[in-house]
Length: 139
Image 1 (cartoon, rainbow, N blue to C red):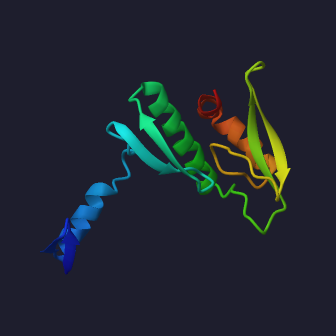
Image 2: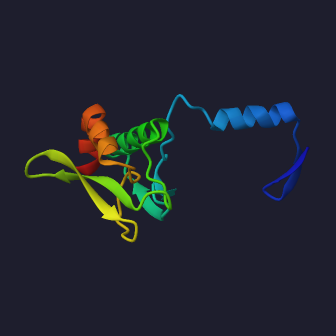
């Protein structure tokens, strides 16, 4: 099959395409920027620009967000627009070093790091299963 790469036409076999896709979609490691500026889409679909500092704490926080988000999707805990009027989210109280649940109506839009959850029980399960990751996200 023919493709255009940097204004040059190249031809790749189906096997070559599969190898390229496999190389860049490995599931054993999370992607991290190499340095400089990068763009990303957050859990609610907003595009952001950030600068990669390379600090371990920043990488740890990104990994915690990915771990929590994966858990939400794998356990079908995600709030679904149009199906539920109330959406739940987690709040971190820094003074008490405590996570708790709160909710908003369908009309409210908050900037949060992880997706909205479908129930208070889902929030409580997340707090019970992944407390350290959540604290890392919110600190």
